[in-house]
Image (cartoon, rainbow, N blue to C red):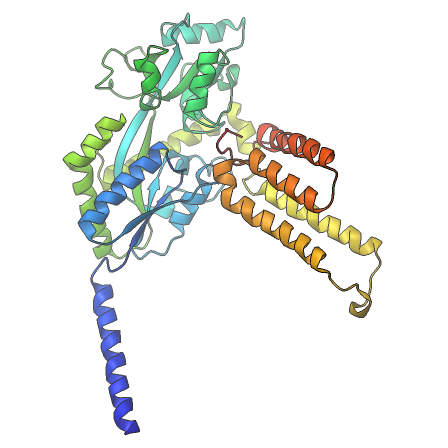
Length: 442
């Protein structure tokens, strides 16, 4: 009887194993993951979710978008490059992939990816306020050369794609990029608001990012840095038409980690090509204001190589040596905090004298709760800081921990209001450490 049961059990296990092998041979046999290196709601997230929805319809399995944010693109691109090369993880890569390693923030480059298809691209453009005295890019350059009042520009963070676009244009025109003060902000939206408020004189960003203000007549576009004019903005010239050879286009594309089996790669490539060339996706681009950039795998790979070289020239120029020498990565702040905690514990241990385990006081419920609060604060920060922002979450966690330690309410409020902004200014402002900006831009 036992022997018969064992034979039946063996047969069932073999059948299950065989069916599992057959299932795995039918690709895809389980959900796919699309890694988006940027936060939910942004342009890259919108493109990622559009692609995921259409892939899900075509492949017949769930396709989930994961917003792996942090480090100015370091987290998402690193996670995508180091994913298991089984065809179940794709990454929507952006130009920051070719910027971050030049700035010493990561060793991940385009060589860590197998590019499949470029899904869209938007050229950089120059914007001024509607009442600005500057009517042409030449007038902006003349004002910079005149130097009576140092011009201020923005568009995104220091060393980002739009900063590179603006600095490269100045360099191509024989002007040192540091002749213009670059105001580092969390993206094109706050840069446009700063332009309207008079805090900066010119903004470098893409036309889709300024479309609402352009339509409202609040800003003017002086020129685009693409090879041809934008279809919906045919009255805006290119820099090339105005005598400049400088061009720069921001792009988004889909890539796999190196080493994915050819059959699976080819299937994904075929589906993505159908999606990008299809009417539904083209309508999405039109409605969103994004521009198409139809490049196949070879063309996309060439774009990655060329843009990496182009960005490297700008970021290694004399004016950008501060960026090159700045080796403060996104993990500097938590590393310093961890080091400070270690020093505090060491000092407490030495000051209290070394004791045998039998001489140590027994832990109390209150003490355990306080330790749990500190550990919980670290976990909460790791989970929500990217969305909420460093200053807000640090103020809340600092206040809660001080209250739990019995600090007076007045001291709790004062420290919670003053300490996080000061710390943010030191690390994010002066040292340019990547700290989460969140809802309010800090």
